[in-house]
Amino acid sequence: MLGVSRDNLKSHEKFILQLEGLPFPLLADTESVVCTAYDVIKEKNMYGKMVKGIERSTFLIDKAGHVAAVWRKVKVEGHARAVLAEVGKLP
Image (tube, rainbow, N blue to C red):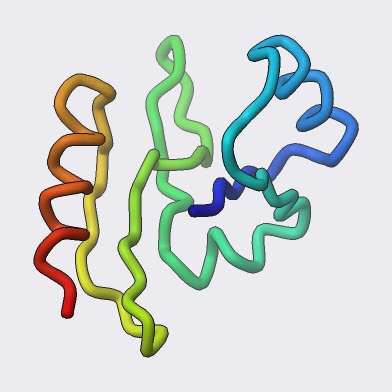
């Protein structure tokens, strides 16, 4: 499991400290290479102004490196359960 954010490493360190730890690595994609590859940079309306931001998404990658499942516009409630159910279906 990995997390990816466009924030820098210093910001990640602060975030992880606030959470008192994180059970997985949080990668800094400051040049948006990964975010662009996974097509998660989307136009959003923020307080009436259109901005480019990240659409929270989860990608399940199988052992062969293929995308096995995708969740876009992720909401917290029930998400972990849905992901774990798909993980259980992997060969």
